[in-house]
Image (cartoon, rainbow, N blue to C red; front, side, top):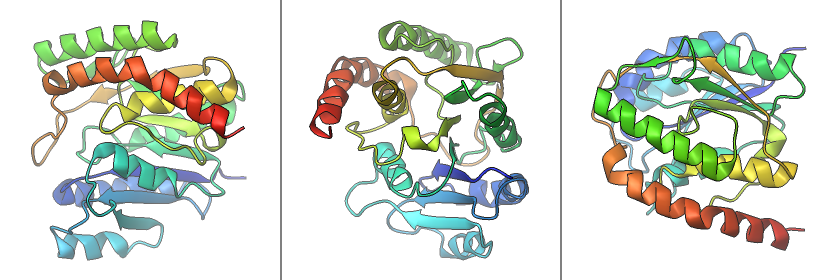
Amino acid sequence: MKPNVLIITPAYQEWNNLLELLPRVVEQLSKFDVQSKWLIICENSITNSAAYEDLKVTENVEVCRRELGNESFAAALQVGINQIDLHEYVVFMDGDQSHQPEQIGKLVDVLCDHDEIDIAISSRYIDGGSSENSLMLKTMSKVLNIVFRKFLKLDAKDISTNFKAFRAPLLRNVELVSKNFEAVEELLIHCAVRLGQAPNIQEIPDTFTTRVYGESKRKLGQFIGTYLMSLLFLKRKIRNQATKNL
């Protein structure tokens, strides 16, 4: 049987990028169960209605909006998580063309072929992986990932990438406490809490490319302090949340 996969893409005013990604993502979806879909979470106020309609033409592509009054990255992820239903696997992928859709099948294959693996990561920082970012950005990113790895006690080199595949039960009904991009790391903490131990992670090499259209909303230098401060509170908040749900 083919796997049932939900691909979640938070995308704030990424219409030109999304239209170019469309045929490549649809090609990946053709390898999965017919109930698989690509869920795009766009800005609340649609800024390109023509592209919006073009994306909706394809049956297994759904475009929905962020909640009114909250355009944050974390809010977009939450909209996607709320739609995890009978899917077996969940893949998160950015909508700026920095992530290559051809990796989706490879990530899902890791989980399908290895029952012991909880999360598959498309990694810039293992052998065979690379990034087109500037040397300064790459250095800052690697340092940040070292901090994440030690603090979260995870065996992975590229924790901060949003390009990951999860077993769906690990994320179903998760309620994020993050306010912005640190939600990427928060998902890993939720998995650890649900498993009662650090998740088993496998990384596959990836080439991170610079976006094709538009400007990045994620300024690493600007958010690095937010990341580090938020990590001090995330574990405690999530564990408290899990205790209340018992």
